[in-house]
Length: 214
Figure (cartoon, rainbow, N blue to C red):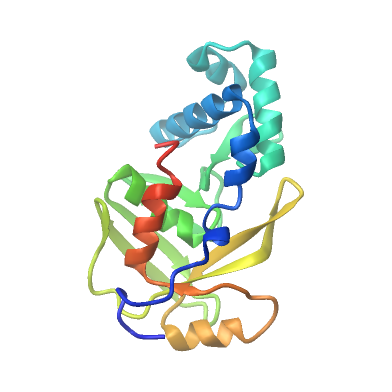
């Protein structure tokens, strides 16, 4: 492991997009609803109700509900108790550990990779705020358009294959660390599988991961 952001091992392909295979098997309505919900959530930074999705997708309420049920089962979205969509593809309006500011609007993300990859795919300025899982130190990572701001040495991401549970499924999570030492310390305890990756590598991967909904 090096201290240069350009030369670390990338996260394995099977950890980059855990729901990709499931989404490929979903119908066209689910794909349309997912993309529309993401766009609306991004535009408003507020929950998206079923009626709004039906109107914007030109689908019936029943068709939208069916699509949402499939997407929840795939772990692709999260709904509130009232049924509104509150998170899509990692972008969330529900407070969580990973905070993301996009163009002055406040969001949260399911994991740190979402915070890096979504702004990269959108090609917008952003600030990711999270904490090192090893020491609890606050980490702030500015983003400029398609690229991470330089001068962020040693901050890495590590994938965990069985950490966060959503919609009854265990999905990978990713975190940012102060440095390689803290990543190694974290990786030596518990079920912490995965490989480190640089911010540059995560940016490139993020552009591809979110290309279908941005």
